[in-house]
Image (cartoon, rainbow, N blue to C red; front, side, top):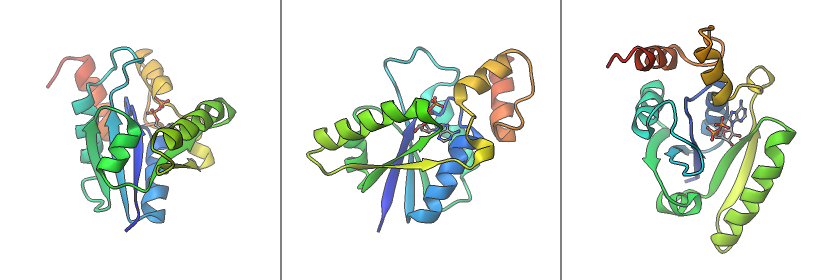
Length: 163
Ligand code: ADP
């Protein structure tokens, strides 16, 4: 069975991430979406648990998408969940250098056992990033084109301190 790991911060999950997840779930038997803490990024908009809950809610009816929250090295998580490769999304040349470097490091530190597969979001989703969503939302503008209604609802609740 071909299971892959799609790691990221997903703060919040966007239609760009979702397009990558949808492609991966058609190509592979199972996709493990891993919400990972990143010590170099400062405090996020959502907590890791909240991000995980939101993604679980969105994919609750998709049987081959599994959502987890973890921390540690991505290669260790890939091995822990029996994933044959890491999926990454490429938005453009700005992502490329970083992703090549990470792919090589991850292959190295896993003794050659964990490969990286890059996918491209369809063109209408390619420019979307979580940071742009947070910024547009912070300016009080509409984010409907970038995120699912569930995400927008949770962002509004968080902003207004509603549980
Ligand atoms: P970011 O905070 O930069 O949006 P994440 O860590 O949440 O990124 O992203 C996880 C993965 O999804 C990364 O490989 C990232 O490049 C990819 N990704 C994010 N948005 C898109 C998009 N619109 N199209 C393709 N890949 C994307």
